[in-house]
Length: 403
Ligand code: ASP
Ligand code: MG
Image (cartoon, rainbow, N blue to C red; front, side, top):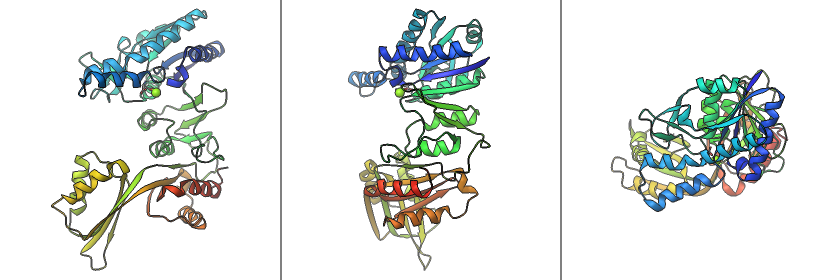
């Protein structure tokens, strides 16, 4: 007998009708083979409404009460699911996370799950029951309710799968898997059958919003295979895994892109040890996220040009911080907005030479100008004008035979 964890996202339980459909999926697993554990998110929109209410009460709403408030949406959806399963003749009950308990460390609204109490849960599962567990939350050492970050129900499912030693963890959502690139940007995007954690992490943090990066990180650390599937259509999904023996000889797995990037270049910076740190210190203090960084040394070795990217919304603030930074001197400051980062991702590039060249050549063939380049072991990113993103994705998708 297999143990499966099924996680349902907000849109999957977004209405009474959807909840009834979800119960049919749960029933399918139960009838077929398995011990079934369910994790649910709040009905879509509910968590946002709760967040808005907190803002209407105070623009400095108490952090602990915030977690008590925004965690309530899951209690509703779990009770409705369990109620419907009982209506259909199954043994089921809801479990809020403090009842298990799901223990967490760290600050309110971004705590991390440290352990899951499984004694009662296992007894209940063995007796044939289907537990329905609230995602996104836990309790801390003071027995107070915590939440684990927006979209955190994925992480709840992954940690539950770990602690009950589940055979499978299936994330049901409103898309039927992870695609080679955003299907809205490129109509030849194809569903990926299997993707490695590291590739998924790159895809997730580079703008493919199927799963939250910290959840993928949890899955990787705990070696939990995840299947992403749609609760709306019955189709095979995408497997996110750490084992690469099952992989084809595809070199590039996917292409992702960002929006709203901006570029800053500081020309003729007096070079000395520590100068890069002096430039970035105030930015980091102000929580400005710096992404790509390129530093060039001048020929006389006394000056350096520094280029880096940030999100457009941080541009004004960054400009101010650099201008009032007394610890650096430079000749010129320049800015660019409406830029995007396009990245090709795939572990295959570790062992295949010439990928960088093929990427640049493909972009050149469409006269797309590259502003900044950055690479890691399994990813090559270029910064280009946002206007050219669609074209860039199309030519790269074709070049790397993703269609
Ligand atoms: N309901 C929570 C949120 O909207 C958690 C989740 O969806 O996973 O962020
Ligand atoms: Mg959600």
